[in-house]
Image 1: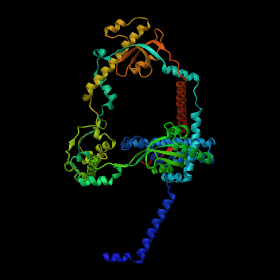
Image 2: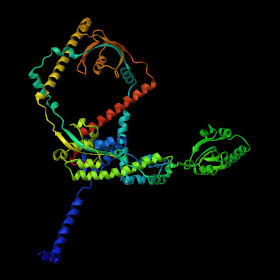
Image 3: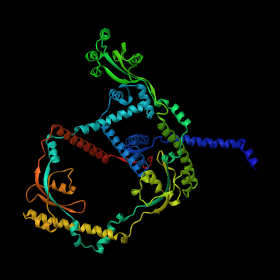
Image 4: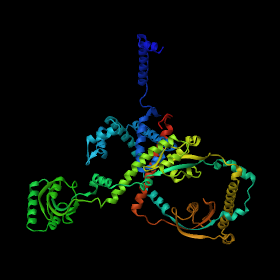
Length: 632
């Protein structure tokens, strides 16, 4: 039967049918390719698409910037899928704002000329070598970034046009002199106050809490009584340092490492020289004649250092007699360097040496010959490095072996522990917010709380804590999130309600004192009954005071007028403050530089706020559609 099928498949009709099938698929494939967009939009703003490639480019650029700035801390954040969704959405919002500004600039008839665009590109330091635009570097960087020159110019033109709108808004704001003075006076004003801190605990004994109040509080705040999901882990970790003690190195290995890295232990020859520099200017002949005259004076016995101080155009070295300190090869101008290293003894003089800087007369003032440390001198350093290299190789071998065993034997860590040579350790139950330091990173937490490890109770993959530190773990115990019952939290609710009621009673009591003070009565005896008294504080400022913030804020709302200068306020720690303003001190005379700085900050803040409001207004009027299918 198989033979007949094989023969049939070689016949004319079979080949014809197969050809038709292939042709159909080919045409369908080509048609779908031609009809499909190669760069799907992630959003549309007033009919203009924001392509996926723009979002991806913005993502890659911002990611690179964040990685360079925050390193491993940002790598941990990237493991959090929710954070990355927010991160991408923020970038998309920025692209939408840019598109709105681009459309606004177009409506206003703004633009950038070809000459402006050209000057902007050639002035970018990224495309310069030694301060000059280099076309080869320009082309190379564009290729590396995935840009064609035309696409880059178009992007630059769009961005420069958009920036005209931004600069117009930021540059249109200003602050009046009176506003700056008023802001300074408010910020730098100080006050002498008296205050009383009234503990709510003094009123807690008179507070009663009913069952209805407990039930109402529980129902109104039921989400507060949700527990967090918790896990307890068993784990095995391995560090490079764990392997170091068992590693040894032979004499042959030390010698081989020494010879292979001999350059690290060699100090190249260095020389010290002094020079007299004469810049040639437009008349090189006159400069050379002057140099010959100076050289003749030196050869006749005049002091080199004094002449350098007197005639050298290198004013920096001239201050120290022409001294250039110690230097090795590859540091100085090639012609200058060759002349220095051709001198054989200290005190030798060069002839007249011409470099890109001018004409030099050089005096050799010191020689440090090349030196090479012996193996014995660097033995301990090499021993440590060789042992570390061997431990590194062993660590990577064990890394691979542990990864295989953890996968092949997923229901325990015993074999992993044997390979690592370390015991299986355990953690207590912990939530995401209270994880032990070893498991506090997002990558670790996402794995520890993953459905796979919790439901299937398998080993994790090998997790790299650092380059030379790994851990494998499994969930030993899991406590799901739940809402605690009223009985479980009843005691806590009673304590909370009592504290709230006690603070309310303290505030009402303080309010009675405020009323008496405004009537001109003394409250000192009433305060004494609760062992309280006024505490004076001089020179309190709006910021940085060592007092409850709510009390300071209230103090700066009050006038110093008798009868109106006192108030009660709840403090964040659950107590009550009574504050009285005694004296208001105006700000000291401000320096002009301080006022100028304040004016700049006020103007900048207003400009930023204007820009934000403008963009929000554009968004409110715009037809914006955001598509769900975005790259994760």
